[in-house]
Image (cartoon, rainbow, N blue to C red; front, side, top):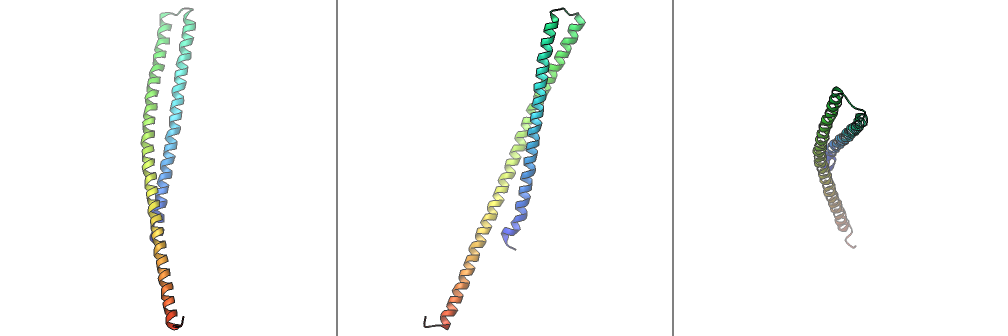
Length: 148
């Protein structure tokens, strides 16, 4: 079996790994979008909640109501901080997965080049063999037909 054909399995395996890494990258990117949406929703909710408190605060609050509103507002702010950290974590994951995908893609391209080189070498060897056979046929023909 020719070397280029034996490399087909290696090329297929490398391609499969690249595809899996690309799927993982797409998954993490979708996750980032989801986490960013959650963060935006929390920020929007906090803004709306504070606006509601301010408009209702003009009517007057009891100390208990104020504490309850204030505590809830602080809890939402903490959730925003946690969600911001989650967004940063997922961004870091994206960079790691992207580097992994790039490494696998480079490896796949390297194997393809190796296979192309093997095909080129096989073609050169085949052409040399064919030329050698033609030369032998021509030499035998000259021996049989010395006049030409």
